[in-house]
Image (cartoon, rainbow, N blue to C red; front, side, top):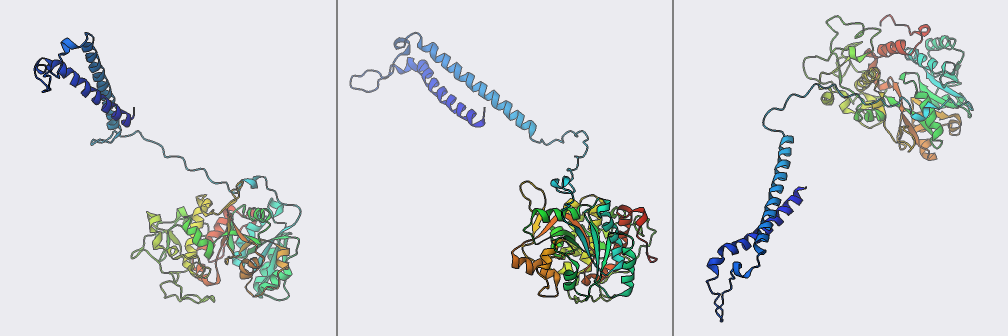
Length: 493
């Protein structure tokens, strides 16, 4: 019985009780009342003697009615008290509750699939070639990329039929390194341009019938399904002009990663460690964030971010507070509560701006890279995934809405390039992510399952004063490279 029903029943019971009480009172007072006159003209009493006027069954009936009403009230009161007792048992009392039995922590949520479900049945297309197109120029970085490329060749179960290294440098030492590299794999090819420049790279390096995966030479990580994912989206969305990977260290995606919780609280160590460090924390085999000590510097918990540095590759003076503390330094996780401390880190300055702090600041880049290594170790690349999907897919595609986007890792048809060269300007990134897609009304898409790490921009040269390149090399040697293709460790570590 609800509280409303109980109240209604109680009201009705009280009404009946009042009516019955008045009738009973008539019986008890009749002996006195009948002797008074009502003052009428005929002088007859308005009070009747119930013992003389009422039939013999009238009095017992009144008693039974009164008993029935009383029973209803008693029953309602019992039910109300029982309900109140239950509520009181549920409501916390002033005394301390009994200690609950120990419970095991709830199981973690199931991990998201490493690729979209449709990819389980998605095989490499055989109707056309998929060619890796590498803009070559930085040997220290390409030594890491080499392991990823070889792992993704068709001969190793990957999607790349060939890899073309386009020489976009005139440094003889670098070209000599490339000559040695292409000899290590029969599917590697060196492409020499008649003249340097991004317009010529696209004009002389592609053929219309092939799909190209353009990869910058300073990509230091991409997940196992990154190439398959961008190919899948390019085929499932033929209206797209190109499909880009979910780039780590990119102005646009960096701001999104920060707000989706993929970036963690780190600050640089300000002086070389005074105590001996384990090999897992420091050295050529160190990459796991879990082995790092907690940041424990004296002074304010912060690190400045500069925005007044020229964007021509100028390096910060060593005495500036925004400069790297020392060469080979690490970035260390902040003490708990780490999430609450992130506003004290460089990433708090992040902006959705192609030319903002995420592009200019080496400090933001360092924090982003250390966060990625932590996410890799914890198997939580799902933190980078966002975007929309079709009703039957969990693809996670983000439309850049014709805004400028980095093209460090991109799938594009050769025909779409050749139909639009020469470009109107020297900036191929602006042409391929803004001008041409806008003119053709063909979207630029990002497959957010395809996580790929871009090491640095020309404005972030100070990043080479961290130990990050060593950490990415250590990860590749342990997890990506074969035993016969280990990356040599430089003498300086």
